[in-house]
Amino acid sequence: MDQASPAPPDALLLMAPGCAHCPVMLEALSRLLKEGALGRLEVVNIAAHPEIAQGIGTRSVPWTRIGPFELTGAQSREDLARWASLAAQGKGTGAYYSLLLDTRQLDKVVALIRAQPDTLHELIALLSEEDTPLAVRLGVGAVLETFQDSGLLERIIPDLEALTRSPQPHTRADASHYLGLTGDPRVIPTVRSLLEDKRPEVREIAQETLETLQGSE
Image (cartoon, rainbow, N blue to C red; front, top):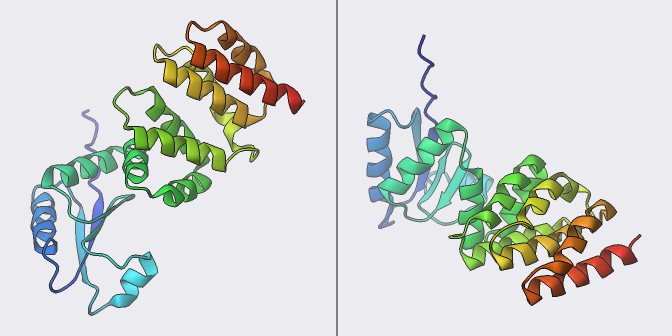
């Protein structure tokens, strides 16, 4: 028996009179609904129902939610279809975190991870991708620093230790620094191994991390 196709996600569009991009978004989402990529489409005119926007915490339109993904501003039909597909498959958390960090929505990422700590793995996976933008890499670091000494970072120690073996020196250096944020002495052997790294910047970060970890014992 064939496996059932994943259920299409529902979508919500907030729009308002005078919004130049809202009709385009409505048309694109309506097409996805007709094609079966969406299960339901709810459209709200926030001029008539401002309480909806207030409850969500947004003042800008168009604003779209597709499954768990909240998107601000105009989106292409291709991007909307991609988010719909990811939502249907229960995937895309890492891509969503990348989008949020690239658009400087750090607080939102922190809040989502507090609610779902296991998604930290999706965040760390961004560091292993060579095409991850610098702004996103910096954002990942800022998120991890927010959770320093919280106990949450212990769950990603294996992920970070794997990154210390990355072919990219900046990834190895970052992984060493983030291992230090865990405050867990069990990572000391991994960090110490980076003292033999062929790149001086990696060795320098490893030494700093090692001193921090040993000082906290």
